[in-house]
Structures are given as C-alpha cells and as structure tokens.
Length: 261
Ligand SMILES: C[S@@+](CC[C@H](N)C(=O)[O-])C[C@H]1O[C@@H](n2cnc3c(N)ncnc32)[C@H](O)[C@@H]1O
Image (cartoon, rainbow, N blue to C red):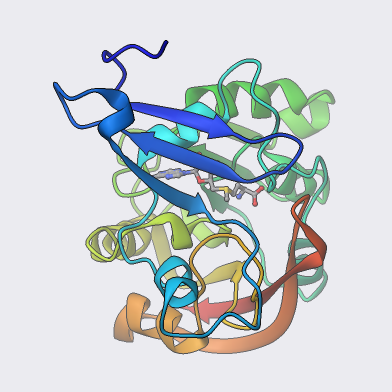
C-alpha cells in the first residue's frame, strides 16, 4: 500500500515509455492526488484539436523538478530522451559551425551532447538540475583529453550563478530543455541566458515542434521561441529537424534553431 509521506510518485507503465507523475496534496491520501501526464500517451492525429490533444501539448505549467529526480533515480528505466549518443540535430548544428568555446549545455542530462562537442575540440560546461544525471555524465567521460575540455555541474537553469560566471559562454545548447519550463520561469531563464553569454553568442535550440503529433512534451513553434527570448536575441537559422527519442520512431519533429545575442 502506498504511504502518504510522498509528495509525488513516478509511475512508469512498462513496456511503454509513458510516464506519469502522481502528485499528492499534503496531508491527503496519495491516491486522492491529481494525475498529470507530463509525457503524455500517444496522441492520435485524428483526435479533435481543442480538447485533450491541445491541453497536453500546450501546457504552460512546465514540468516540476520532482519528475526529473524520479526519472533519474536508481533502478528506473532510462527516460526516452536518453538515447546514449549525440542527437543528430546537435551533430548538424556543429557541422554548420554554430558552436564555439565555451559552450554551455543547459539541461544536459547524462551528457552525450556535451561530450560530443568536447570530443570535437570545444570547451564545454554541462549543467543539469539532477545530481544523478550529472554524476552519470561525469562517469561517461573516459578519455583524459576530453575530460580536460568538459565539465558537468549541478545547477538550476534559472539560476546558474554558482557554476557559470558572467559572460562565460559564447554558445549555448538547449537540447530538449526549455520546453520543460513553465511560462512563469521563462523570463528568469532568458535573463540567465543573458547573464551567462557574451554579446554575439549563439543560442542553439533543438526542441519538439508544433508538427509532432505523437505523445511527448510541450511543443514550440518558432514564434514561441522568439516570444520567449524577446528582442535581445535574433533568429538567424531555422531548420526542420528531429529530436531522437526511444518513444518516437524516426525521431520527433523538432526545430533546430540558431539565435544570436
Ligand atoms: C528532456 S531532458 C533533455 C536532456 C538532454 N539535453 C538531452 O537532450 O539528452 C531535459 C533535462 O533538463 C533537466 N532539467 C529539468 N529542469 C531543469 C532546470 N530547472 N534546470 C536545469 N535542468 C533541468 C532534466 O533533468 C533533464 O536532464
């Protein structure tokens, strides 16, 4: 029987990668709590817009931190975004010359993208909210030459002052990160991007686009990115791309974008 002392519980329904967070209200029985699908089940394209489909993919509440602590807990199967290799969109952005040292990889997870960029010769700092993700990222770095170029630190993207000095980054990678933020947190994140970057820095995004109709996180159109970032960042490149995930055959439709500060 579940106990009431938990404020949230992650429920994974194997073999499907569908994950639910059950939030219990304090002092109330857990089973009386609300159930919210942050990574929603497969959404049928036939499902009428304006009902559940729109509610799930346009969720401005963001994904609360307990979800990420739970998905990286010991014994939990890897979340769908942990594909054990660099995202092909990140590889493409690098081939296009969009990154230069120092790269700040925000919400880096277990570090495959950051390590790819370090292997390519860039200085990289990866940050993530979840200590277990950062521990796993550090453990991935096997070669001394790469270890000299990449660092991983625990930090909330809305306040990275303890690990990122002002103006450190000449590039930022946001790979599947900003869609986890609530609308309320977006301005704080953007202010932090401004603090951490130099003038002329590139901000590279690879995030689910409005064209992806299957389950998954919140979708963002190019207009959403531009509105989130405001006038301090100018869009220079937009490429229809894919975010690879173990839950999306062929990859989820995504935007690969470059903004310049
Ligand atoms: C969808 S995953 C993407 C991970 C990685 N960038 C990738 O593409 O493989 C989102 C990541 O953001 C992290 N995260 C969530 N909220 C965060 C926050 N407020 N600050 C920093 N990282 C956060 C999660 O722990 C998770 O690793």
